[in-house]
Length: 268
Image 1: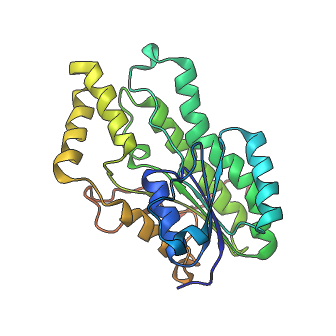
Image 2: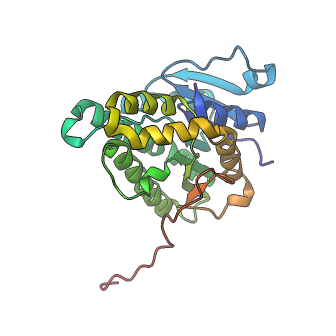
């Protein structure tokens, strides 16, 4: 096990974010669990409760994130592990029929909020010459674009690129930035997609088929995403930077993401 670090997990009150927060705490890391609603600690062990501090707030609000960094730094020290797990699927509809506010909010939560948190907590990591930024993406960002999920697909493609820029900037510093695909999890987001797909009727049949498949198979175990995060924060992943990382034996086989960069600029 790696030495204990201070971790901050967004979207930590439920689903995959909660699983990651608990996994980090069980490995001896002090965890700041950030979410819009407080983390329910009633079912946690005494040791888990002692390792987790729940803070409520909206990470899509940059003023909150800046205040959060000041509070955490003052009360706990510099964050060394940042896991951006907060996310929404957003509208499932043709672009021309989507609500602009809902569409834009999907981009803000899924892609811009991780920018806010990385911007605020990265300086502390660079100062200590060690850090891990792990952003939860989706295989949807790698699939050929199709109808109905433009907000989610766009947000995750943007998150991938943001993470690659971060990785390029921190290369060699002791800090790394990667994205992970947590798999096809029967989560609250799955439930949201199910309701929206059913409301669309025949138009949403492809999503309904995916929802039914996840239901029938039971989906990927969210603990696999937790295990992948634990692997990325361990010393065995010191050289992993700017990568699209997959859980172990996902229900859907991994597909290509991006190759190692080849810089062949004619003016270079």
